Length: 504
Image (cartoon, rainbow, N blue to C red; front, side):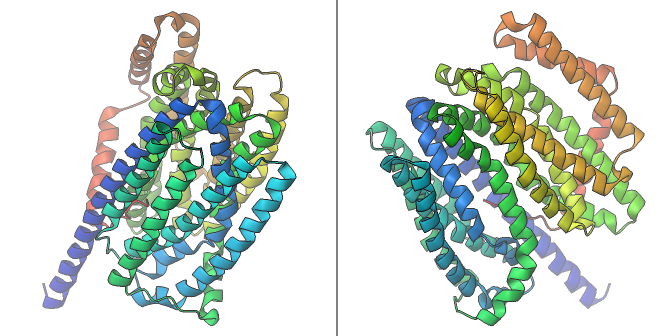
């Protein structure tokens, strides 16, 4: 081995070790902050009840939808350019930040106009202004985090994430304990994000030598390159938040509180999406270099593994929604179990969509992912508006159930489009057999649960699990040996490729 090749190998190992260490560090802080956030939000929901928390959920959804336009798709561009040249970000970030400041002014004015047209009271407006200030800070923070992670200089970033979440949680707890006005909730978010912005900017100046200068000649190419990411991000947020905004007009605050609670419980299952991306993308990229046949085989086996892992939680959410709502949220949210049971399959659908999206991006079909998001931005509003209108008379939780149906329907459309664009190479007889057998097992479990096990209380979840395991193993739908073999392959590939750190 020559000195040059030895030096190259040593540098490669250092890169891998740094990426792995950063992934573990940021992953740990991600799990901790998510745990804190979930616990505090659940406590707040139980304390305030669905009718009181409804306006807070609306203000959050309303401002999230409005401020998503400030992102400009730049964060993903930063992750692309910074690993190549640290100084590259200095050429355009100052101008991007200036554009965002102007856009933020326009967004606040437009939000005021919309709130006036909607006839929202002063207390709701106050919630919106506070959440808007927090969203503005989040937009800048997201870019700074992308900058630091791309440069692999995360010193202080994990601690900052935890400190900000603790500050946020302290504000929530103080609002509950001291019976403060509801605006204390978004103000807690704003103060935490503002602190994160100040410290994060300091970290960027220290580690990345960030200098914010205005140069209009540099920004146009950046915006052109970022446009597909921008469109996709806007579409995703609009689809995810449209339903709550519709409920504010078509229903009442209690329905918003009930549906938001169900959606929050369902979305907690998405915590592994960043980690999944970090494992699957390097694996697929390496397999592509070995030829299409081997790549397509690992793609199919990865989908099979995702289905093996995702079917049980989706089924558990669907059949045990009433139990989970009772244990986590309390009886005040009992009517949200209907929506939660419908949202159960989104766990399965979303994780499969993530894998297919990675395959499309690596296959040079980035615009397919963007166009799919745009399609969902059309389909979801139509479904929400239609189903919510039909839900009048369904009783408590009915409007939320309608929104849940729209969410699942949208995910199905997205998957159909992705599967069509990828073609038959992603499905073979083995995967199809596994999918059919596992789906039939789920149908059997749900039927037995509804017809025979309702009188067993929480114990029925254990009975359902035993029936499911017996059916999938007995029918040969799942092979534990083959699934474990693929997991070992993924772990081995992860050790040979730089891992993308999870995004906070």
